Image 1 (cartoon, rainbow, N blue to C red):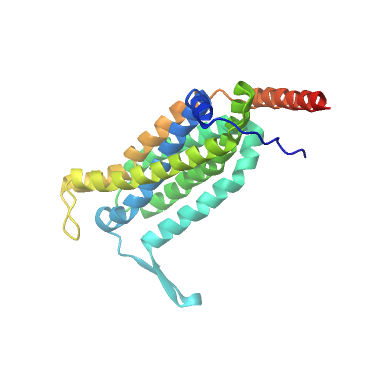
Image 2 (tube, rainbow, N blue to C red; image 1 turned 60 degrees about the vertical axis):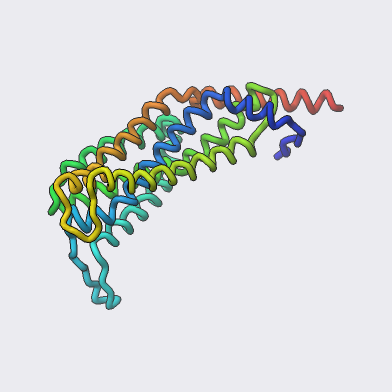
Length: 258
């Protein structure tokens, strides 16, 4: 494996290239929406179970002399399903490519999040099943984001003749933090808007708001993500062409040096 030649570039030119990089903008918005989706659902889960479902069930496991609450089971299942989703990524990308795997996962998360809104308060098994399915979809997207940012680095080099991998990944990392920040803040803002009061009997408006924060609002976020990623131009075929062209350019550059 030949290392990529290091070269000094202008930060001003790199930022300008990034600002005109259409695939980067598309993935940036899609990524922020997915992170906001995860942040809003995770931040709302405690309120959902405490005030909407009113679940105080504790499940005991005699073989380890321990007991867990329903919210704990919900969150643990979500994390396990996330891992399962990550494990499924190589299979799905081989079958559909990165773009359509991402698109399928976000569309799936959107549909099942909408269905989550219609679950009855006592439909515990339905809540847990949809949590698993939605979390698998979310888990699929997570590793795809970083892999697709690497593809954008290749596209940027192919288009401009300069490689700005560090800038692309650092700006993308910043977008991840922005997504978590906005999603976490949105949880507080929405609770205030719907009239939530801590440790009190909630109004009908507050209960409806909490339910929306676990279903419809996250679905809007992944719906926007799916809309943007559907316009993503770097298909597997296109990336293969770009990779071959870059390899040819590098070989010519090496020969010219000799």
